Image 1 (cartoon, rainbow, N blue to C red):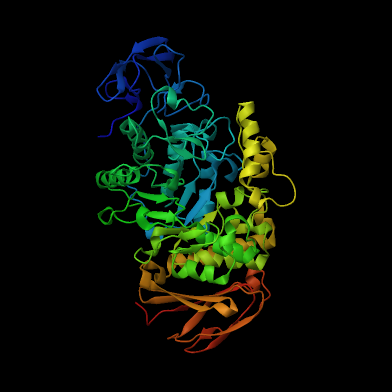
Image 2: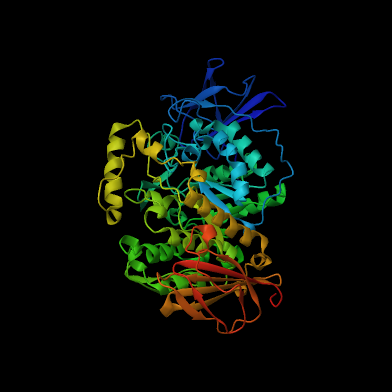
Length: 613
């Protein structure tokens, strides 16, 4: 049974309902600071929830809770913290005059995702700044944005994974009303919104949850300290807290989907795992709302249980990130084989990423020193999100270098084609489409000096395997944050503009060719010339076929197209002068059993439209 938590303004009765979970408290009062000063006792129920319904408190009322007569604390389910995580909570209206009330969503298999960080994406660094760039994203071909976490964190600069008020929309980004306006503006342009949420840990500064109840447990160890209590005593209230949070984003803010951070770090050995309970609740919401909602998990276990249907013993996440696709591609293009890249670096790993999804699917992992992973054969391609860059793989480098700083221009173009024309759901990381050269560093704005010292020390230690020459940027410095902002003058740079145009062309092929309408496993055939470091991807569907020939060698390579049937016409060659290439020619048409010579580090794309279903 789910229960409301937080402060709910009820417009019809002009009352405000306060509800807070504090199962071991003896007394709880709500302390109102503005527009009047009141101290109102709350009444407990049998499940540990304390409630009161108060008349004549308007939207914007500032309040805190006092537990057992101790110092007042912010509401753990506050919808807005106008003064940050240490200040009072504010009552927020739950209704909104949606301009897109009939928005039904986008089918999962059609998503083309663009990951962004609100603070560094636009010059303004706000939700309004995102709105200003939406027409740009539509022009690029994007139909979904994935926003790094916006739950209230300390200060104004943070990746978002230090959020402490999980229900509150970050004040420095514009707060709840501005976020609703941004979601509405996205939907007006046909763009779905995916929100990154963190349910595996809570940030350190401003985290008052343990003063309300047993939100944490010592049963398990985590990289962040105490584990969240998903299966120990009193865990029903904790699970409800996170379930209600997920439903709030999907229902009250009309977010289309949630990206769940590092779900392998959610420790839960209950008969029904929290993720399964969450997927059931979201399915019920879909039935009630008539809108498409989905859950995308970040999981580092190569375990299909997370995305398998509940009737097969799974947790029924709709999709998952596949870091191994990135690792195989990145290590091959850059030559990096340190840290977790030590499991990669051979061309066969890249082949496996296309053929099997999981590179390690029940085989021995040298990095882990054990057999690792399961097979993903029974799962359609749209259950997997792939990328050449993302916030983690860039920001968790010592210098925050993007791929544009690690490989040459031809390799950048090849990397784009490698995942945008894959059968999986593609995800761009903001700025990669023009080869942004600014780093994406890790940054915070904590007010606790001891915590700042610990963060600086921890970053150096945690990513020691990836350290090169130089020193990491100071995460607390505003200069580090400012250096991570996108530079929007790419149209004045011919090479960056050409790369952007190439991204748009590749996205257009994917969106508008019927070969990509099917995500079944039999809709993709991988043609390999492993010894020559070439791949052919034959994607079929809707009576059409797209043949992508990818040369991962720094030399021109001639390969036979054995078994290929039909007549294929050239769509795109990344070595063409249009894309700032060398202009080396490839056949305008391909016939059966023909040989083709591919330029170095190139992608050549052909289309056939008659013999495939």
